[in-house]
Length: 251
Image (cartoon, rainbow, N blue to C red; front, side, top):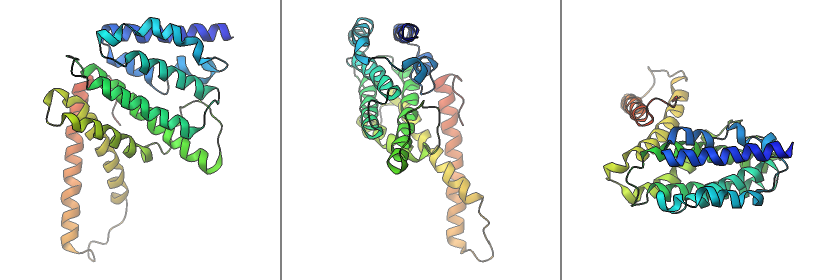
């Protein structure tokens, strides 16, 4: 069993390396997804993360020069974290802190001035933001009642933590504000904001409003901003479709 698991993780390391060589952001995002089968609990349980450090160094060291510094550290630390999660080696609060560090490191790679073509890194940002927000939901629930560390497929309440994730992205993206060449990353950040806003507006729209008793001024403002937010959301959805070339289905 363990032998098969080692082989599966080795395959993941190799596939990540091929994605980096080919600048294939779409496939790379799938390998970084919380739902990646090769990094499921069944495949990672019982493994020692330190055993994969030499393999990661061998596979990724060259990309620190070919792409940007930090590539090897990111994927080594990401794999270690996934193995630690599968084997109950950390608390969810510790996992959340490490997840944010990974997100910061990915943004540093994305913002590296030496990267000429960087848009392929955006789908990975999409996966990492979702991964971190799911971790946040688990951390909150574990503090409340205590839960077992299983796979990361459940996504209940993850939107509650997306604001913190997106604020983390914004603090980094502010360094390149106005730089059109980094526009794709900002589009994802803006889309995330609009998705949260849309959820809030949906709750309002489902509430029965007595228009005969509502003050006209606030009601006009509400309808104005409601329409504006929906219009912006459509613009961001269209931008993201163009960025990801239709590979991601946007909710």
